[in-house]
Length: 154
Image (cartoon, rainbow, N blue to C red; front, side):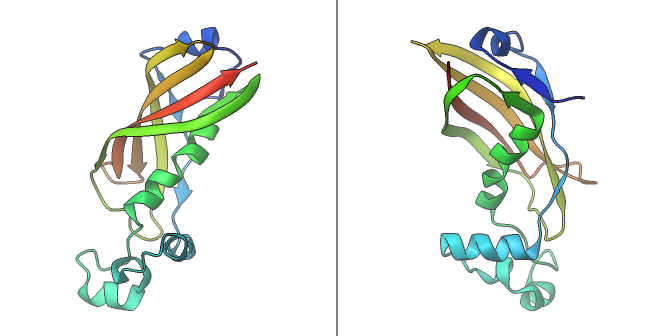
């Protein structure tokens, strides 16, 4: 499926209730996990100590922080849709976030998105996407959520 090009509220609205697409896979590396740990001041060993995680951890490897996996959603969303004619875009919220499966170091993840609702708020488009972060070769998703973006089209 090729990348969607959306240039207005009306063009976006045409996709209501439809799957918008799937991103490419992104490998989650130990370096990314360590950088996220530093940025969020969350150095729990299950994330940052590969030797201890291999010996004592339930997954026999380090795992990505749950919020690291959420934080890559806008990057992966940009692979699905290219939004044109924008003055501004705002990450507005995440609702109904449910983690389903940990992402182990070096797992590959991708985002699947469906337009769940879209509203014109006095010229601002509020788009709610039902998203699933899929883990390559794993039937259970890393998470499901409703991600909300505000788009101010020109």
